[in-house]
Image (cartoon, rainbow, N blue to C red; front, top):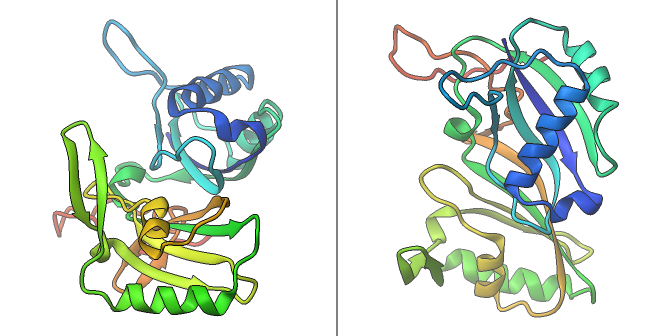
Length: 236
């Protein structure tokens, strides 16, 4: 049986990489006595799957992982037992069961929200002017390095929304899917906003037909009749 876990990553845990987080969660689940389901083969491992990885040093207010258990437990029991074993910095927000056959997190999440704040506050009107000019541009080219080398990438299609708050903070909604990712640092580079800033990932979403669904809202299994995932909202 699969369960979806929503949690907050803050404090010292923001400096843990993905593999360190994987080991941390595995240990916490074992200490909590959860009946983990394991993969088959010569090297079985617990069936855990995370949402899009969060870069080291960035706080996450709404991160996700799915875990499979060999025996069913109630959402409340998992939250109580697991929450007691998490270190300071990780906060369990929600646990809910996921129907058999529901799509994996990485196959449905396609947008990430970020908030940017600067150590030295910036004038909101100045940021608005730069944001308006950037969003009016048909192409936003940035230099991106990868394993294949360094090249120029047009990130404009993946910049979904930029909102400037009155206090000078900047909210972003950017592409974050298996097909492509726009990094918030790239948007800041394109905006030519200098200074020391703090990044927080405030949410992960399924962006569909003009709506934003959270992963806890998007939990229905695929529809065999249509041969593809069917979007739906299941609120708890």
